Length: 107
Image 1: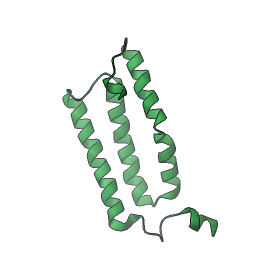
Image 2 (image 1 turned 90 degrees about the vertical axis):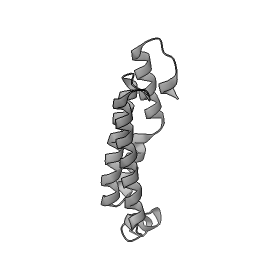
Image 3 (image 1 turned 120 degrees about the vertical axis):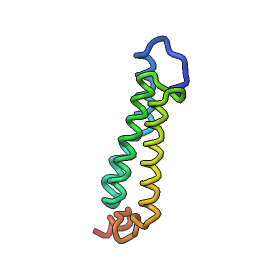
């Protein structure tokens, strides 16, 4: 994991962590989700995405598992993911409200 590697400078660490985030296609996934998911799911997923970015930024700034600020941000991210999962479990992905590729072809 990029956050656990050794770096010659704080700038090198920041670049590596930001690159890993970019390589994970998180922005692309968020965009696809906003285009296809129901509004209720998008709202909770975008909230989770923002919490993920906050964790990323703390890692890029040199914080890690040993740091209370990082652990608190990681907990907020976990809770945001849980809320997204619960939204999904409540049926927000109902076929009547989700634009699947099959439904898009019928438009």
